[in-house]
Length: 320
Image 1 (cartoon, rainbow, N blue to C red):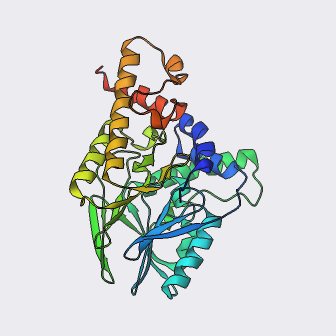
Image 2 (spheres, rainbow, N blue to C red; image 1 turned 120 degrees about the vertical axis):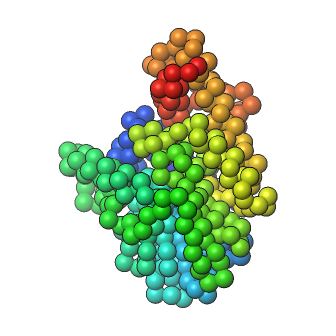
Image 3 (cartoon, rainbow, N blue to C red; image 1 turned 45 degrees about the vertical axis):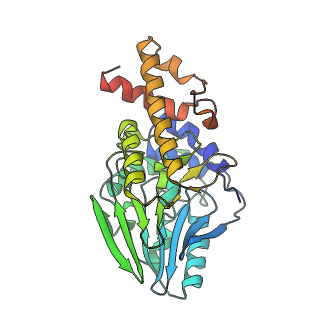
C-alpha cells in the first residue's frame, strides 16, 4: 500500500520560506485536521510504522514493551499511544525517541509524556524546541487562536539527550541512536533497531519529495549528502528504512538505493544553485524557479521549499 504525505505538502511549503520552526508549527496547526485514518504495518521482527498525519512514527513491540520513534500531533499521538499500550500489554511505553524537533514529529510528546518512561532526543533539540515554543506562543497570542488549537511542543518533554551515539537493550532487541552532524536540522538522529534491522531516518529522508531544509536550526545540504552516504555504507544491505515523508504515490519505507538517490538529489540541488548564483540570478529570481533537475524528474518541478536554503547555503559558502 502506498503511503503518502499530502497533508505535509500543504503545510510545509510556506513554512520553509520563513525558515523558522515557530512558523512551521503554527502553519501546521492552522490547517483543518483531516479525518484520522491510521495505517499500522509491521515491517520486520516486531518493528513497524504507524502513519496518520505528520512524520511517520516508527515502533517496536516485544515482551519488554513498546518503543516509539516520533509522536506526530496531539490527536494522532493519542491514538498511537492507545494502540501501543494495547498491543504491548503494558501500562507504559518504555521509550519515545524524537528524530528531530519539528512539530509534526514532536507535537504529540505531551500526550506520550504521562504514559512514557523516558523521552529522548538529540542535545540540540531542547534549545530548538524552546526557541520555537517562544516564537509560536507569541504568534498564537497575536492571532488569538481557538482553544482547540494544539499548543507548540514544550522543551520540558525531553528527559534525556544524545550528543553523538546512544544505545540500549529492549527485550531481545538492541536499539541505537546516532547523530551524523547537521543535515535536515542540527539535531537529527538515526534510530536503528539492530536485530530487526529497521532504521528510522526521520526527515533525513523525503522519498521523491522536495525537502524542508531548516537552516535556521542548523541544516546543511552539503553534509546531508554525506550523512546519507555514511548511513547507507554503515548499515546492512537489507536494512529497511523508515522515511519521515514521501511524495504522492510513494512509500514511506525503502532501501539503501533510496537513501543514495536522495543524497544525489541534494548534491544536484546544490550544483543547480551554484550554477544559478554564478550566472548572476538574484535570490528573488532564484526562488521563482520551477525547473526540473535533470535525473531527478521523480521529484517534480522545483518549489520554494528547498530553493531558499540552497541559495543561502551556496551564497554563504563563498565558493561557486
